[in-house]
Length: 337
Image (cartoon, rainbow, N blue to C red; front, side, top):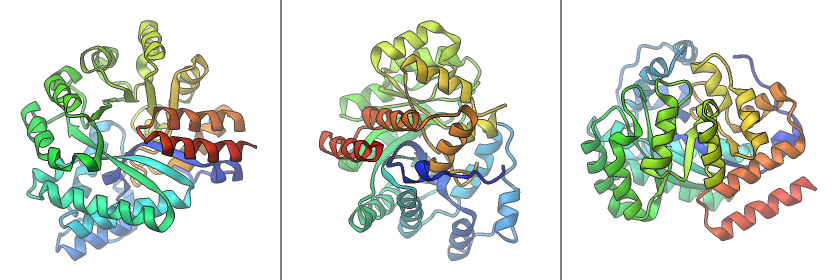
């Protein structure tokens, strides 16, 4: 993908990001550095070779590279460096607040402890807040291509760290792994006080049924991706009626499907759905949140007012404390002037 030009208004816009996988921010330079630090051999001579391997045409082809990248994350310092790098990049793009997915099962399944993962991530986010004011909260994602029992065990592992985790989600390969498979896990998570979101990826098999299950069986507060809801007017009506937000990711859409789904995002936006724009896995696709906003603006001719409203949507559906939301909205209002 050609470099995306970010105009001054988008660059300066105070931003809120709600769909960002921390493992998906592992840039080639850091990937190679961590591999060298941990004595892990990768089949790449340099950063360019890593980039050349990022030739995706589907969700499964992306996930193959994604999980390979995680193999270099071993120590608490590795997870610290990963989150610190994202926090610095986010701050440079005027991201004021982010809710950040992490995939503990992808690490515990290869022998890295839950404690190692979350302590490294949390320490980096705490340091970033003190240094720059950037605020990041963690969302624990279960991997849907593992068994529900593994997800439940991971939820139990997370309970001693509840104060560090704002919510739970569901990601990875959706084929054959519907939301209902994890109904008991999400019911327990709700009872423990976690907020609920869930990936309903673009153009997946049984996609509208999965969105329906996320709404009616799981009772999510947000849906990650979810633009296929347009295929069923009743789904759109229910999403509107319940105030459910959608965390869309235009650039990643354009890599794993036929296009950015820009028209669909705009239709949902115009209908009043609380659509947001996010970066997903920006080291792999590539494009951080500013590039995603700029790409959508270029495709649709979005106005400054549209971009402001997208950020209002994100603040509204975020799980930030009310006082933080007030601060974010005040800064956005000032920028809008």
